[in-house]
Length: 130
Length: 35
Image (cartoon, rainbow over all chains, first blue to last red; front, side, top):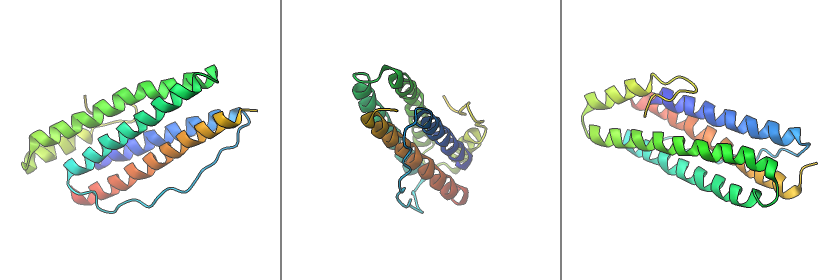
């Protein structure tokens, strides 16, 4: 689970870099603002991945709103926003699948460890779930 | 030069991805200890 989350972090970073390069390439001013301090305790694996799923829903909503706005004023930027919006379908599906599997595992430590091993097989660009 | 409102919108998305990056890194560090 730790490896899956680490690779997910790297994937989000790659998205950020794409957006930075796009904006800088259009002579825009890139603003990197402060990021809130993160929790040091995310609870159980189920609670952690439920939070992942909820966050992905939040991100999807942000891209959906951005798409609805940008398509009216900038067709070129609409393309990149739409690409990310499409990718959110997979992001939500993957995190929801993990939540459902952890729920099925219940309080069985062996089952949780099996899920942990499965998620540990993830390679960048190819999530180990689905 | 990109339009001001487009620049603002992309910067908002950059910030969201920035937060996501940090959130998942923190979760990963927590899970190393948890499991």
